[in-house]
View 1 (cartoon, rainbow, N blue to C red):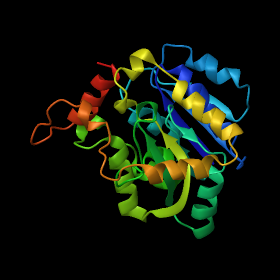
View 2 (cartoon, rainbow, N blue to C red; view 1 turned 90 degrees about the vertical axis):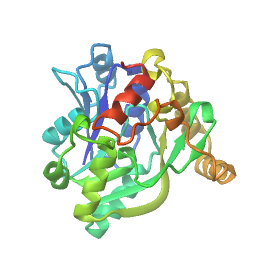
View 3 (cartoon, one colour; view 1 turned 135 degrees about the horizontal axis):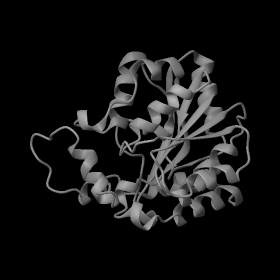
View 4 (cartoon, rainbow, N blue to C red; view 1 turned 180 degrees about the vertical axis):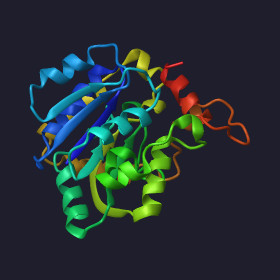
Length: 260
């Protein structure tokens, strides 16, 4: 199996993402860390793990979104299946084992586990909205290469939603009803790519390592969350035009992150 992490100049969180790939109980993996023309110490962080399963590849030009690194990763992938992990997200150690049991065990081409979406410093918790994020999915490699990731400048929706939507239309989508993904959306954290915090990811990694009832505690916290509470993401957007032009959504979220 191949795991793809798309990253850009945020090595402090990348460290924790890589760690949660390498602690997976499913061991037959390669990890492709694809830089979007990184200029920081991300390559050195990757090399510091000294694990032969990990490969670094840095794109020569910046794409401004995960579509470019993910397409590059698909081209380099040697596994029969591909999973993705956002460089600021965290996996539980059994994430890939559950996905492989569900997808490979049933012959499905695309499956996902459940994701907890976490607002800044835990101020919001929820199961997200509709489609699973890339950090939750596993697909057959050929399916990913066939449909590819589309450039955000051609899309009204984000490339992540577009990819999962088109993959689902092609193959169906198998839900594996276990919580294994903890997502810290950078677009919900103003100037995240300027300030580059990693304390939330560090805290979750420590808790997963030390807290015996971690999953039960997170499910309880989700159960206490207000079902009508809105996610923090769209509150940071400028006034939404009607109709929304191609590329507008990703461009606005890039501004929120401090990238433009």
